Image 1 (tube, rainbow, N blue to C red):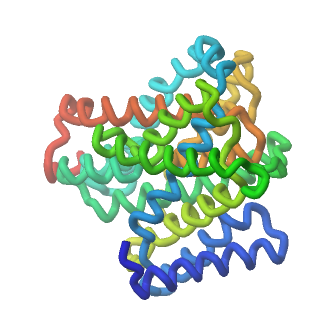
Image 2: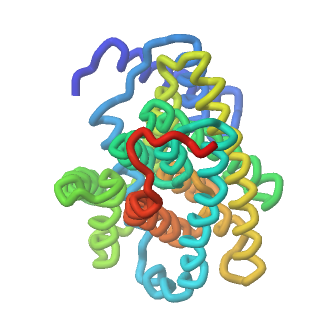
Length: 349
């Protein structure tokens, strides 16, 4: 990775945000500090830049953290999760039924852009699929970045206000308290899992590859700990940085059309996620916090951070997000073809 001037300034800006939020006692400082500082700088016209390969490697820490949390009891509970997992395709279908008309008729986007803006999949995957279908790549990037931004801000507020959540859980033991051999194994699992995942073309390879490899190591007793607290904090910093940097170079017209459309759609999705949370809770399938995090339409990495900090059932949350992303990846392009969504086709009148 080439450490350009923009990358260095972006990193130190994010670090300043984290330390500032921590110093004044604001919640989730290593996530919200970098996010807010980079977002303000990007909207002010600063030329920020993502961290490239280093930023991607930092995401592998979350894959390792998830995999290390998969113990035999999580595997044994998979049949118990089946009922709520079965709601995921219904959830995605309802999102599509709401989202496509919203983005075409209310916001004026073409059908390809509207379709992939509606789908709650990975940002990069939805932008790629939308580009292949002839959608507006910049609009898709901003809408999905806004989806992640809004949910990462709203989710903690909703969890505290309605579910009495407290983000006080220890995120991990300090690195000095862990065996150096285990730390080395986890670092290697992150790197190897990511690279193998890329070669196998797994969706979300930087998280899913390390997740699978570390889960094997955890289930076989090779590792017994999650990544240290310092690693989880670093991952939070880079996630916050990445979200803020997506808005670099944004114009006022893009704010008025793309960002506001993303914000409005996320309000609808938040209400929908709350409704499904209530259904899951009333059916006795999961506690409210677990259900909300499982159905919140945010990025997998961001929801994992919140699950760790809130002490939620990480296995339950992750299984639902993996199923959500898998369903979208596999069926969104197929459904788009069946619906006749073609390159450049205008919205219906």
